[in-house]
Length: 109
Length: 115
Image 1 (cartoon, rainbow over the protein chains, first blue to last red):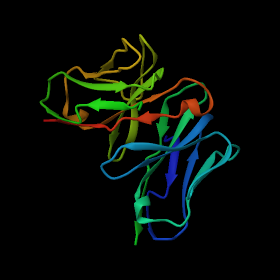
Image 2 (tube, chains in turn red, yellow):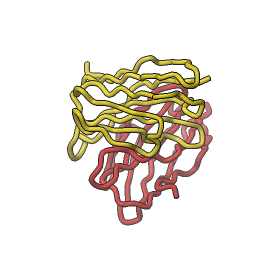
Image 3 (cartoon, chains in turn yellow, brown):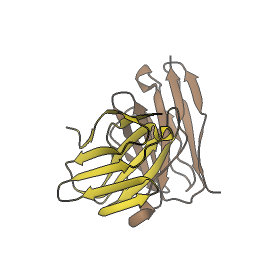
């Protein structure tokens, strides 16, 4: 059983579109993380949140603890947003991450 | 600037050889982690450490070992490399604590091929 489910697995969007990536989980958590990985590249932490909403530039992350669900939104998408976006959890009382399998986003000019 | 580095970045080895992947961080973080990334499986935890002389097994620890003799380094050793260990390996670190102190910082990765 996968504790972290992401959808969609693949997403193609036109430049300028509003994008939503979803993450559902089944266990208690202390925090939820959104990570970004560009092709052939390293992994960068975008957000870490345990409640509510966070915004950084064109990226917005929300979490609903009761529903065990988080979303990552990208407004006014751009080709440079093309990457794999990974949802990950920190379990209650621990620091290590459990990962979803990622969403591959391609933004076409 | 503080950073986390991995070496080598690419390694090709033969089945049965011992291999050590290095991870070094200058963040002075207590927590360090090793993950492997494979198509179809995503990222999975191999081993982790919450401080000097502390090591713990993760989800896929068989065939791997780590040791933590100082704060900065957590080398990952493959005792007898197997083809199933061909993967991309990421090291990460975080400061123990609540809130944003738990954000993880990742190294650039090591691509290991076992022939």
